[in-house]
Length: 176
Image (cartoon, rainbow, N blue to C red):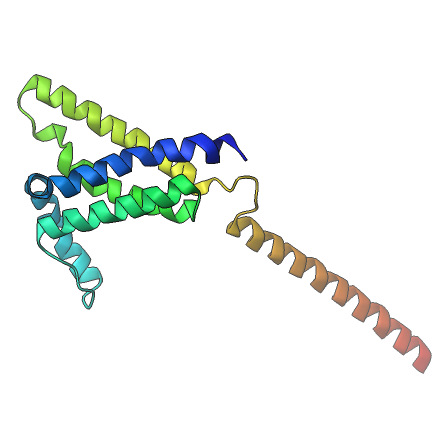
């Protein structure tokens, strides 16, 4: 087992477990902060996927986000579908960060500095999730396997073409 599986993934996932639980316990407070972000992005998602049942209530969106964070964090911590779970956590972190840590909207210098630190922390966590999302633990990823298969097909095609030319020469020599 690698250090990534033993320590790094559970450590990275722990912030989402704590955040998800906190959001579920304090849904209404989170919903107040999430409303401006939801009001901006829900219409975009509805236009992109018109038939999808996208909730518009900020409290419902907070609960869905918290549930997604809890499930994906558990999956990441236990090594189950680590790339998918890291991607889900990264996708859930962006709206959370925009809603909770909008330092650019703060007027008080101390509050602005505190929100900026949290924003930067979340940006750092996002970087960790991106790394977790591409970590294959030494196993070839899908892109590598696809490139390898394409190279194998090209090599085989060249060999078949070479064999066909040789057979054609032999057949021609036998006819003459």
